[in-house]
Image 1: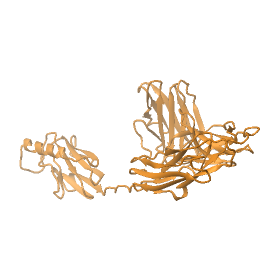
Image 2: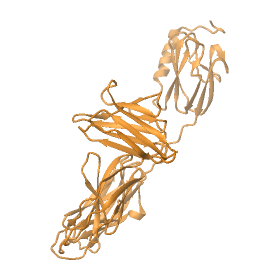
Image 3: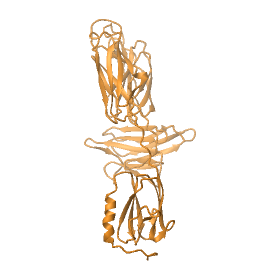
Length: 459
């Protein structure tokens, strides 16, 4: 029943206008839906909080209604009982009331309110800083080429480049090495490391170690140079002296600790007294070891930088000796880089356990790869499930338990998987940014995991 009269205009007049308004909505901001009428004479929801640039779509769910701004700034026309749709974009911040002229008035009866906040400004661009991955590099003259790594840190906005050069220090150009120069380029969004090579001559003259001077210059695209590491030294280790009677003793007690979303710090015990340095190698869970860097003799720490965020890495170290000798490898140590702290957001492939711990699973068979599909358990917020191939075939139960009481003072990660496919389980404490990664190889029955030292991030 109408509560006030209004001139009748045929629905056919308004339908094209409503359709035109709907099609004219620009592809910007977010859209929010409001149901009009139906069982009750109300707007559902009656109150919305949006940002400038967002749009609201009203859809008639039943009854003879309309949408009219309290200040007359927008309307879809007179009340109608067909399944009409009306879209309005809110370009400015403020509070906007509206009502149905048949069943309400400003602030009374069938009315609604839109609160529009100012849109967030776009973030400032950060092109990043360019630097050598370390201050010194070592290479045996027998290797033939030295690989030098340059990093882009603290930003990846825009395309950038930097010039590099390798010139004579105590080494003789053309005799001990070949001078080189060039340009390294990064695309917009590319934060990976780039490399260039220096050709080393393997002579037969016994001589002391010699140096090549490495330099970066002329960054473009808004990038800057890291003053602390815009130059570096490449040391050519002579291989023409008599070999030692025994190779260096292997380092032991290798440990790895996450320092940031892009850095893991390594430390080990030096057991040799005749080493010339140490080489550090790393790999992904399914990759092969590659040399990551090197340090001088008696140095027992290394910062592995330029790593991917929230990823698992494995490391090993060995001592280098004169005459191209090497020790055995140290023990293998593994660690995951940190994540950037932020809210825990659940999704189709993400569990948000206890609204804090993000859990994700990537899987691989001999013929396919994919992401585990998350099954949250409303009745057990500390737990969740994952399936890989079908919702009727649950592969994993995972839970994070709060053991933040003496003597434990940790969050525990427990999970069990009934599968032998390869999978990588990543659990992130979104409050602290700390990450734990668990890997199961292909064709291996997954053992249960009971990690009672997972997160020392209480409370």
